[in-house]
Image (cartoon, rainbow, N blue to C red; front, side):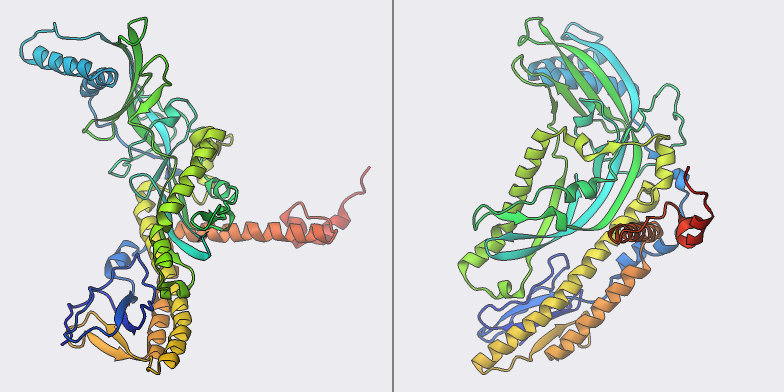
Amino acid sequence: MLQTRIARHTVAALPIRAALRLPCPPHLPSARPFATTRPARFQFETAPFGSPDDSLRDRLDGAADIEADPQDKVEAWPLLLPRDRAVTVSEVAAATAVSGGLGLRMGLHHLAKRFLGYEGLRPHVKMVAFKAVYLPMWFVDLSASATAVMGDEWYNLSGMSFAFESFRVPIPGFNLPPLTGMPIRVPEAPPSLVWKGEDFDPSIPSIPFTRHPLNIPQKLKALPRRVARDEDDVGFDPSRAKFRMIANYPTYMPVYLGEWEVESTEFESGTTRVTSCMFADTPQPRFCMYLQKTPDSQPEWRPASASTFTLSLSARPASAAVWAAQSAKSSNMKKSFAERLQAAIDGMKEEREQMGEGIVEWTDVLPEGGILDFTAKQDRVCSHETWQDINEAYTEALEKYELAREFQERLKEMRVLLLILSHALFQPANNVALIRPSLRSPIQRIDRNQLLERVGESVDEWREFVEESKPNWLRKAEENEKIVAGRETSKTRARDRGRRVPSSNLELLFPFVLLARPPPA
């Protein structure tokens, strides 16, 4: 008797001998495996496919029709942390950063002062400066796909998303060490204020934007190719990466910056300096500290700064034949590939950080005219509040469409392998169980030709959905980029043919204008 739960998604279960497996896209939820009372002669592999779900459709509903003001792209979080509380927490944190005992004394001092009015427990922690400021910060949505190799096998990398605690990457829009290298806490709520070029509060200054991250994709593609050193190492070529989503959000984050003089027996002077940063976008205090622990050590941020980019990776063999491999070596390769790839990328990042200036290396100087003028002219700079959730949903739809299309190609390749296997074993290879989210007929038997048709219909539906739900800003950006690329191609071809390259659109449309020009003196 065949037992199964009602599937949430349509999946195909193929009986496979000798562990011949059909690749299952990892990002799509799979159905629970079903059991049978007879001895298992075959292994079953489920491969989900189907239509975009309602939740994804709701998140992208109307995305293609939204119009946003290009002057309202720079946003900010309101300052929600009271100054008095920020001072108290920063004071205790500065003492604790130098010594746990000092932190305990400072905490007891505040309790004794509050309830008993006694101040004799206070250690030497002197406020040198304390100021609320708005820091310019970019958040970047960046999703890409690439190919890597380990041993003799190629792997497709899907969802290579650069993230910092979420899908977003915080990148400072300024270059003021050591602030540029501090660990940024990603706000949980979206920004609710629009920055128009003036300070929200005259008492809270805004550090101006001086750098932008719009060229990060080109910088990533320009990274050197990594060649595998042995069969267990990973090699990849960054120049072949394909970027799905590139969106940039300029924002201002409110923080309290403090400078403290704290007693310390490690230094001859008896004191050391500690810089505190309190994130003020929420009433709940979150902070980081910058200090030199001992005279022989270098100043550093605590908690330690995260790497510039943290990659969330998923890898699948590029060839369906790898999925059919039964050897322990192949199985071990598939299991350890992601770990080895991550280690290779981490090593690559460390080399770049030692050669360059950290995060500054990934940004460029902002052109003259200021941030408002710059963002208004850039198609890939978006309003965080308007577009971030939509962009994240669209990236998810893009990834699922690409997985469905890849599944279709592997199914065609696997079909040939299954036919060869069926002839070798004198067994028919047409049994496919289609498990659907239906109460009346949850399981339907179809042949592989019908399965290919179903998968093809699914791919077409995903393609249509992705095209119809493409965000309006992204559609405009791609159209303008195609126009620019076409002009560059025309100029290159003209140079190759030895012709004069037109210097304006007018000359492109009306070449006879050249005849009316007076001869050069």
